[in-house]
Length: 119
Image (cartoon, rainbow, N blue to C red; front, top):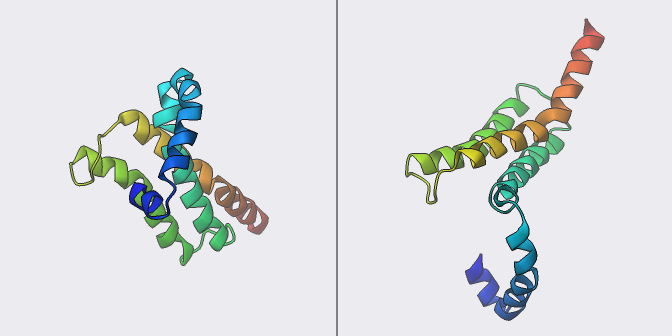
């Protein structure tokens, strides 16, 4: 990412932006700074795939949704196995699970409603 920032000539504005929030960030709990972003990207990844599939859990959507969940959670597990660069953190893993579940929750609710309607 920083290579892109430098290539676009945005290094100075990014530095200024980071400096302007440094004191606020320092006051936040560690989980907000380090683990919440993991949950948010896992949530976004799952929501994108769910939206593409119109929140329908089908044979066609299941591999995509499962794959997205594996990518999200697997990224942290890969760190534990030293396959993915970074440091494994069990709190990150919990937050990733929460993000995945929250992202797919609307599709699960819709699926349950549809199964109740057919029962």
